[in-house]
Image (cartoon, rainbow, N blue to C red; front, side, top):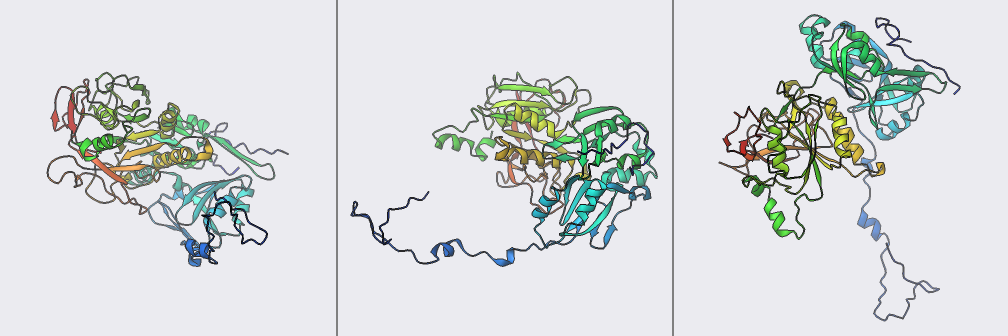
Length: 523
């Protein structure tokens, strides 16, 4: 079926199956100009011709046509009308094309969105990714791919090398170490494709003739990884049983092989700078978070600190280490208290002091490291528990990821998009991510804060010279690598006093501490 036979038979098998298978109108008289006389105060006035047209304006015809460059820009290089230009070193074995994937360059003859919708109607074809500014990566059976190539708005189509499905950092490891064996000891993440419902475990595409392309990523992971860990559908973690990256990247269920994501934490005048007290004073209904559940994903939580009262409605270990305690930096307790602590232990209150807390613990107590579950699952679980706001003071610790739009970013955007669609019968989920602490240079915002559908938050000084109107020098700056402005807003982040986790043992980064509170700087 076009798949390399280097993978053991019986597992990496494509199941190529055949089957036959309101305005109120006044009453008018016969002539159209008479007015009922039961109310003598009424006066008729005539409206000039085209007054509504003039009020609304006339559409500028120059805006009707799109003027996209006929390109698709990728981490490996650029696709255009003439072919593919490689723009970085790639091992020759990774230039082999994927038989099930094409890159389509969409012309300006039709609107891009319309072309995408029409391609999505082709049996046996799935539009997998938009590649700026004019590319669509599609997957399908041979017949479906051929039908897509013949679409009138497709300027040209190109084979996609398997290196496109390997994270650039892993590509660098292979190149620098002159071979794939250097990847063998690394903890890796295997990602599948996604559709409107979220990440996919199974690819199953049937064309007009009944020919079916089908594969289960779970089976691929079980053959590829030593004791793979399942984070979510289409999200697996592990170490390779043997190093044969090319064979793995040829598999239709594989969207990307990448390093296991590494995250790091980013984090009583702050209420004054945010005008929280002013809001309380001038609104007849207190905007104090009452009746709302806020989800916080962070290191851990000192649930019985005192400033949370009985408002913790959930406190869950989401990485599987069996603990939700905040044993190391106390970052999670500090962040949660900034959001909704009531100041019971000493007056350093948070912003939404009556809101309920749903907490998701991400720190491994044994190592002190943040671990990443599937962000798709993280957000779904919080929403299903009643949270409509999800706040995250952490992000990627890899400098190579700064300003990038990566897999986690796409997962977050996907969920935000889903929960914001009224026709999905859901209520919306506001998602916030810290921009990071890698400023003052530009292009330093860390994923997932680079997502399009989240509120990315930088930080300004909370006290001292220039506060509150000066940015903290360490706050990450935009733009993203595709030119979008980030962060979206800033909030107090330098010298913020909030709750101290009583079990925390590594609080040396604070600038002030008492029995129940300490001062941290960061987003």
